[in-house]
Length: 175
Image 1 (cartoon, rainbow, N blue to C red):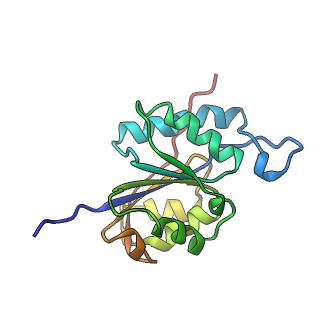
Image 2: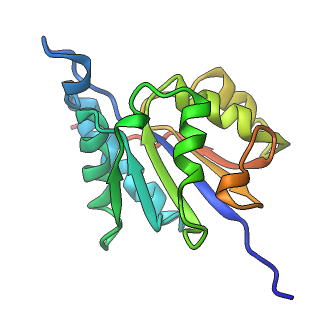
């Protein structure tokens, strides 16, 4: 009998957006977001948290975040843009994740708050890096990344079934 390695669900909140006079869905990244999104990609690369599949919100700021982060990974990663991620509650995000094939062992979800933060807190059991869950619950800022270790299949993911393995807020250098 082979032992199945834990899967990783990586949650990336979009980088800081601008506030021009456009519909919320069409807001672009602002100057800080343009710096921080590549830093998020470098963090993913440097920590070995390379996704096999990305599911990204259709909102412009999320798509731009993924595009800038992806440039740092050094290879093509399949991406699906899913309108259900925009403005989603945790239960809706879980429905999206439950459709992912089991062969995908590292899944990256690029989305928005409060849905991503609520999903991370809900999924994470008591076991986490010291203080990481408290930091995440206190604030899940733009460009934040939560990595959840998931022992079972995607369709079985439910509150309390994952472990918060890492939480980071990568920032790019100001110019």
